[in-house]
Length: 236
Image (cartoon, rainbow, N blue to C red; front, top):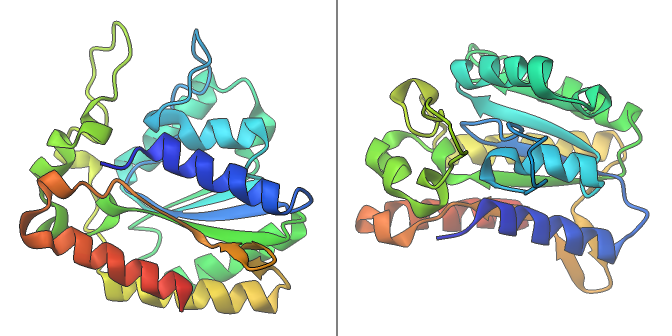
């Protein structure tokens, strides 16, 4: 299993090493908005707060979440209002649920968000795809519950399940072909707004990452095949 905190942080730290002057914006495809518990006793980075930590630590400069479930979006807003001590961080986030992106609205949402990135001084853009954004025919509800990288979300004295553990936390999902269309539009809008897609230095380029591919829970390699398609879309 891939660990979200390890994959995201490694990709962004490497990108910053490639170009220390880059201001990096990330488009994140994810069912869940992982900014929860950004302030905790031991200042530990975990799956549930990885993106909040990346903003605070300066590895990411702007994040747009796409295809979150509506309950997860609402919970993120509550979490920020109640627990976030860095309100300036929240100003560099945008959160859009599957409902926000329905009825053909996704293109205008993305175009506006990328313009906002440009106005915020973003110079480079990366894409992060969490595999739970796929429809359940690829991942299945049990895939997310049983996956070690997901089901280990735990805080001491926590009595409520996370949105990775309840069906209400899931949106309808995006097909790989849908993600291809999104990535094509992201690349186009990045170019229009004079933002580089990926971070490069010499022959090395980082375009983003794919998270939570879990082979042991992958029936008939359907999720692995989808991940390979998404990687090809990023590189193409």
